[in-house]
Amino acid sequence: MKPVDLNRKSALVTGGNRGIGAAAVVALAAAGARVTYTARSAPGLAQGPSGDRITGVVADATDRAATAGLLARGFDIVVNNAGIITPIGHLDTVPIADWEENIQVNLISAFHVTQQAIVHRPASGVTIVHLSSGAARNAMEGWSAYCAGKAGLAMLTRSVHLEFGDKGVRVFGFAPGVVDTGMQGLIRASKLNPVSLIPRENLAPAELPAHAIAWLATPEADVFAGQEVDVRNPEFRAASGLPARSAPATSSE
Image (cartoon, rainbow, N blue to C red; front, side, top):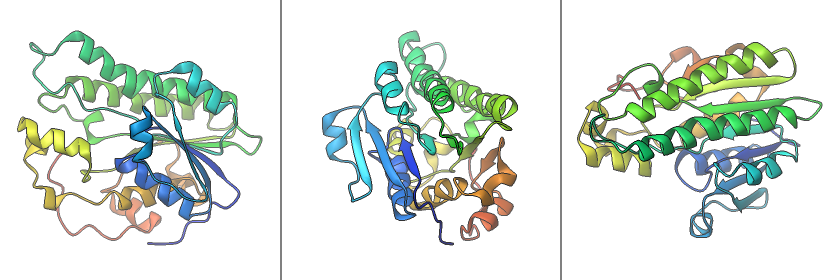
């Protein structure tokens, strides 16, 4: 994969203690950025990445006071990674409180983080990466909350670009594909839709989308600003330095 240079940049990754978030923290730090990441709890933080350029803090993405305090520092790069897949189930059985929690985490907290990142952006500007999904475009059985939240996040990306794209704000929606994370374990256990039937050995390692996230923070990615970019897109893979895909897409994720 091509080298990425983010020296002298600062980055914040929400939910950066595991999965794609943790891999993104490592990739950003390896590129030279000073990275802060959040975890919802002290035990979660203890499981997160560490290093000379990495700082972890306990802060729930839905805690507006905590996230506002962090973002007041003025980060060059902000990755809205915190998210949940639950509830998984049909509409007639899902508790509304669980549905509401999904929207709160996946969409409303992302809006608040984005708003604060814009308000406190450095004079040089800010890059915001929203972790999107194929579920933003394709309904999946049992994922009504997740699909709705990611669809809303996709429109938030477009709205930010429309209002601030010429004011020092670069924003991207990034769909990482089907990646080997704990979230995919929950999905496989549900056996409710095609994504849940994908064997674990067919899942991509988190390091691949993490590299793409770091690359999006570079000027080379300007051509994709304001868009929903999919890791499976051959043009995107070539531009970001990801290897060509060796297998066809098997889901909407």
